[in-house]
Amino acid sequence: MDWILGIFSAFGLSASAGLNAYIPLLVVALLARFGGVITLAPPWDALENPWVILLLVVLSLIEFFADKIPAVNHVNDIVQTFVRPTAGAIVFAASAHVITNIHPALALGMGLLVAGGVHGVKSLAVRPAVSAATAGAGNIPVSIAEDIFATFLSIVAAVMPVVVAVFLVVFGAWLASRLGRRKVS
Image (cartoon, rainbow, N blue to C red; front, side, top):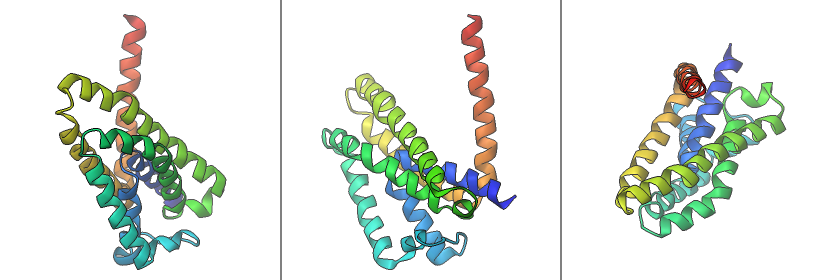
């Protein structure tokens, strides 16, 4: 049963990385270092190093502020197109109990796809729509909401992965009903 919860945790953390690359990595690093909630197997235990944690804090702050400045946020999204899927792959593979039960290449690939998919929807659909609908005024509140959601999702995925499972089931049912209605129309 632990490995199933580990998989849900990994999916939640990698989805969070699609919104903000460094928040889930920082949450995992802090929970492993100070909380004892997560046990990281080598080589992922390097995230617990105080210097790595400090680097993640600095990178989180840079991404936080870069995403709030008009025009810079678009450049940031381009740069993050490579960083977020990579962070998702790392956090998926590093999640508790997952790396011991899933081949590392599969874990890295799944994290890459999940984080890359979330980032793609964010940067190619949501953000351009918000920019167009609000003449750019909505980007800062949306960015703040994304950071809050990424932090919340990272903590919940690490501490209570069963909540991620329930969310996925509810979201899947909602999506299936929406797609079913479109076919009927």
